[in-house]
Length: 128
Image 1 (cartoon, rainbow, N blue to C red):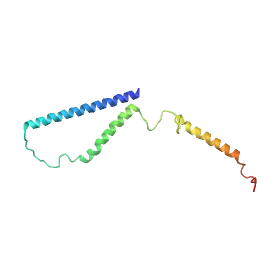
Image 2 (image 1 turned 90 degrees about the vertical axis):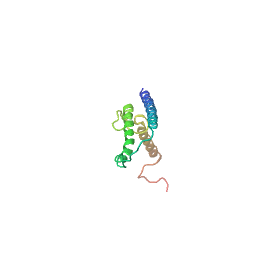
Image 3 (image 1 turned 30 degrees about the vertical axis):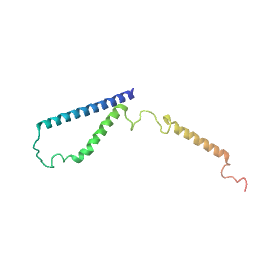
Image 4 (image 1 turned 180 degrees about the vertical axis):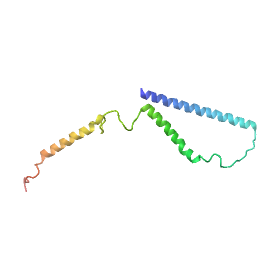
């Protein structure tokens, strides 16, 4: 069910992006036709002071805005992934920490096999 909501939201965002793009294209064409109809205009150059004050920050803030939007959407649709887990996960591969339990059992078995194969320490060697 969660995946269905995510896919529906993604399709809705794609369609909204297409609609915005088509609308902007048509607005640009209409504006260009209006300018072409009026003929030539006198252009006054004001100077480079207007519009350049926020320039370096705009380059960094614009992508950060998208990271924020997509991060909020991820949190809304897929929940938290970092910090406070709601289940008793003990770590390790496998479900519910079975990997660490299997490792402990194998470790104990290996120690039991090696102690049965060798004589205990502190004794005399069997042959010199």
